[in-house]
Image 1 (tube, rainbow, N blue to C red):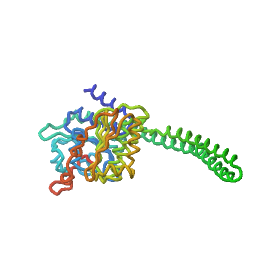
Image 2: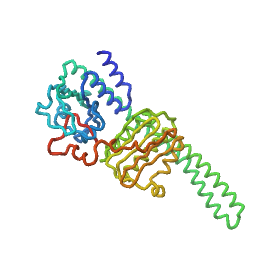
Image 3: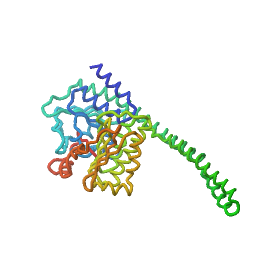
Image 4: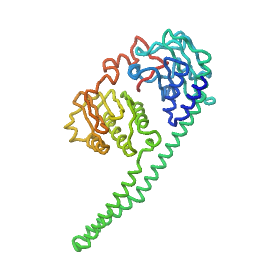
Length: 403
């Protein structure tokens, strides 16, 4: 058991992003005590949770459960208590309130606060199905030990991310100075030469021609300078987190900012060059942006596989031929796909949603892979399971879902 704890602690401390640390904590906690379900929650300042990650509940069921939980009921008790809470049947505790229709039935509970001095950074919650035995004192000690190391890892990850943010700001300031000192100065000179050429043209065409040669040279130099700056604009997150985690973080941010449900799934790893990662990131960001700006979708998904990356939405769709003449960034996305040596496949029609698939290495595309089931419940069912019905109030134990 000590070996397992050591391995779990080692896995936690190896990661530098807060999200990765939280994922490792929740999976390690569930594995160490053999729980059916586990969750880790990081509270925000508005009565909810900035992060609430579960382990043991499938993605489709999480979507059906509904939005992220609030800081009330049993979760509030674990957040405010300085000692762990261990119950054989949480439903009999007066602090328990309810859970939504799609929530799994749970009995035994172990809740441990993650504390840094007098501050509670988060909570670890473990539960078992109906009929399963409760947690032991030894289980509590294990999770307390894990939580103490988790507090250090979370703090370090936050400090690291903050340092990266400061580095990005400094880098942007440096690039702004370079744009001003190099490119802008050349463009200013180019403008003066063009004006001089215009004045010389009526009386001295030969001199004007010389000035136009200067304009051409200055324009070429400005383009070269600008290209040099653009090459340096590789997103810092790619170097820190890699492509997959950068996309995951982008999807998480979109999920928080919009009412639309956004789903991320990694099926197999992607191996790309540094330049290829930038192209894929920009392409996926463009496809996701279109889904939010134009589709008015209720659900958007990003699926990553070794040979393809798919962005699908259940929005209003569009006429692809017409869209090619009015924008939506389709030309830009196709150019990026071609630059990767791949291709872009588009499946859409008015009222039928949209699927954008980046084919890496020109993998064969099967349009039948798009299935609305990937979003969980259909629109009519979603309202029934969103935790707002009167026949059962929302859970405050293990809920997870979308804003």
